[in-house]
Image (cartoon, rainbow, N blue to C red; front, top):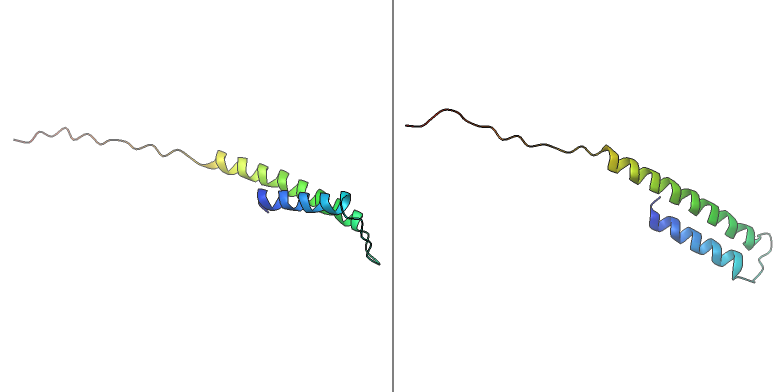
Length: 73
């Protein structure tokens, strides 16, 4: 899950929790909204952790110049 997907889940969850007043039989939309927000926050935290671990793992490649001491005549 990437950061954009996590933010989308948080936004949809907040809309379901705070803005939707419709009722559906057998489904509590407020609870679904809270679940989506929690999943979005967990995904956001995991994405940030994975991204920071990936940047730490990249090694810097050092190029070494080879000096040829032989003289050309």
